[in-house]
Image (cartoon, rainbow, N blue to C red):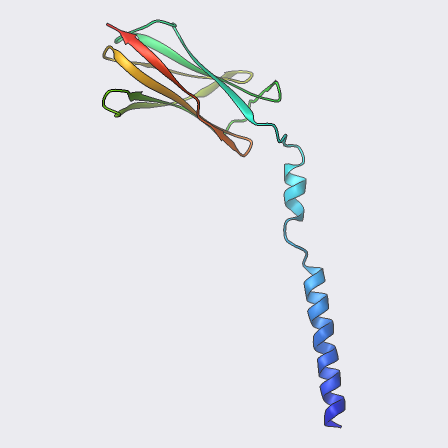
Length: 140
């Protein structure tokens, strides 16, 4: 009698174990659906500014042209321009870029003193982050 009860309990436990493992799935099924429209191609960021020759204290427009697979990216989560003094390493400014037209993000600023600066555009878009850096020479 005790042996029969043990068999029934063991059988019931096995059914629950197998049923529980197969019913839940991995929990990642929705991920494939959510990312199905995303390209695996990396985003490309082209950093520039105008005017090309920047003078101390004068306005400058920083531009990040963001594309993926040759198409403009209009849904970037963040576009930020970071200006760093190359001599001191001090971050002088962080400017938020805004979408101006298809794939073109811009921010206006100015640099008070002549010198050499690093400009880094931090772009987060479509689960990716890109941060190209260029050197900007500011004349007096």
